[in-house]
Image 1 (cartoon, one colour):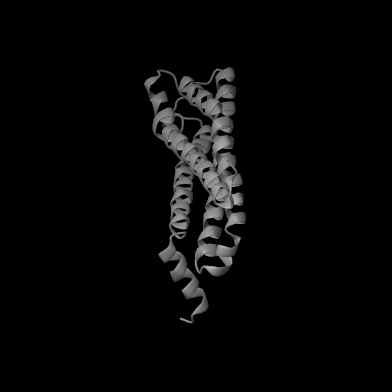
Image 2: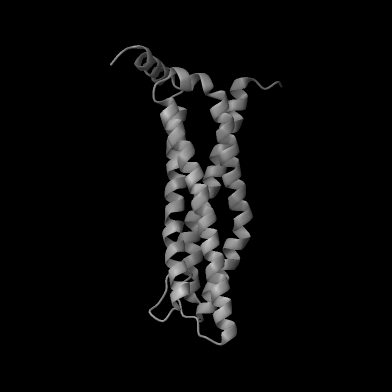
Length: 196
């Protein structure tokens, strides 16, 4: 069976959506499950170690999802070139979607960096014989060393931003897919050629 341009669009859309779902779902699981599950452990250093290990194992899979989202997004942009020129609103929503994807990827990278800083600082404190007290992987206690607490706050904020941005990327993608419907295409083209 030979693939047509429509098939290529469908394949790119499927890869994009699966990648986005992996990115979004994994991040929500991490924030709601992995980070919080450490509170079941007795020692603060173990709370950090378990979360760091889990995120480290999920990291390559998460980046696979992000890469699929970004690369398939480029393909979707390429096959939608005429639509961007003709259908009013399509290009601006597409640009907003691309921006949320790039910003989400940057936020993901920064969250991972914060996690590595937390892990490194916690291990250094442990080696010095200092007690590492944390509520869970991203929530400090009043006795958490100041540097660790600072990076925990940064990571927690960023980790909540990531699923918001990944979710926005999915929602904007859904909007763009709906704009392929005949009525939406006609309306968008008429809005482009007729004055307001």
